[in-house]
Length: 114
Length: 112
Image (cartoon, rainbow over the protein chains, first blue to last red):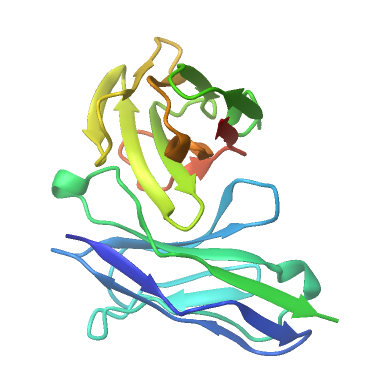
């Protein structure tokens, strides 16, 4: 079945550091890929998405590129801020019998210190 | 534009009771999805409703059920509550035919 694997957390960084959170997927077919962010006490917010190979999603300084050859969708940001502290989830949607179903990774806790 | 809303924010029930959770989608969205976020288990897909019909279901027992109303709002019902049903239940909505799901703040269900 479909699955999404994220790098183990938690991740702790200083402000202005470079961020990478790794995400790989397994799926039958070619899924759409998403990054969601969950701030403390809140629901999930869609951060960015990519629907086909080589697409780059970007939002609020975050970027991720859909790499079909490595089945990856790593999240990056050049300079993190304290306000980026949250839990980040990678997700896929494959269609077919999984149509409408988002498959999530386990989440990565990011803490940014001043 | 108002986002996805869920009620109640918190719900405390006793084992064996029934719980009803409610969700109102973003205006214009016809699909509603339910997910369970249990501690240590991550986010698990529960149900998808579109145009009043159940379109897909995750690996949950039949005591998890729901419905979608003509105004596209939705209810999730959990019967015969068990302690392991304690979780944050998230509702999401989307436009017809779109992959992007927008989430509400969730209902925290505690079963004692």
